[in-house]
Length: 301
Image (cartoon, rainbow, N blue to C red):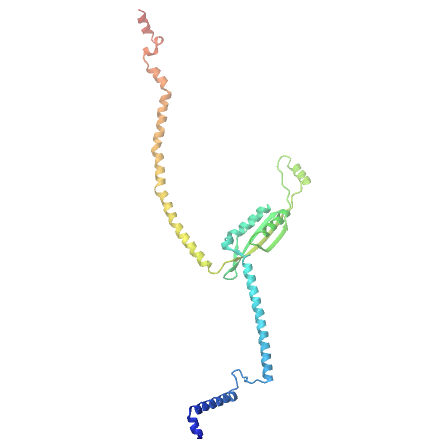
């Protein structure tokens, strides 16, 4: 018995066939009418579309390479900066440059046996939150070889110092005057036989970069405040104790003993005159027969 289409689609097999036909139609509509993508392309690109995509890929690749080179340059610069920080002046490692920089120059002059005439104060100039300049002026007056040795000693300093300014001038030579009866003759002889050493005046300025990591300023300030608070209390207690008790006790002791010290002086003087007083107060019997002639005559009778 043959079935009509209506009867066939009423069966489960007919319903499945109808669903498959509807799905195929939906896919066909999507492919035909919705083939445009959001980027403006199609699902079935042509040769021109492929050429445009390849050109875009090349352009983006060149841009990526340029940005990569910039990034590598920035990273290299960052590495150089971090490496240079180790050569800068670090307060935690090298101390404060306001005092230690002067000590470095002074030690260099001592090692070179050069005479430092003037040594200025350290000046700090801020660069940013972490870096600052520390400059120091100095004047050295000595012989040429000692000045050169001084330069060599400064180059050995750690952290390394950079020269900001250097001037070398010849000092005028002056003969040393001799005084005395033959001063004119001695001065003439000394000028003819001896030649004074040539002195050079060297004025310069050295500079060092100080590195202060961000965040250490607050910690350092807090530590200084706490240290000051701890040091003030014991100092006040110690300073008040000698002022109230000790000087008073020590000052009254000599006053009390001063009269006792004069007592021996009064007793020693009679002690020195005791033989004379004893001889004057002695009886005639104690002075002996020779000192009492009356008693000797009665004894004879």
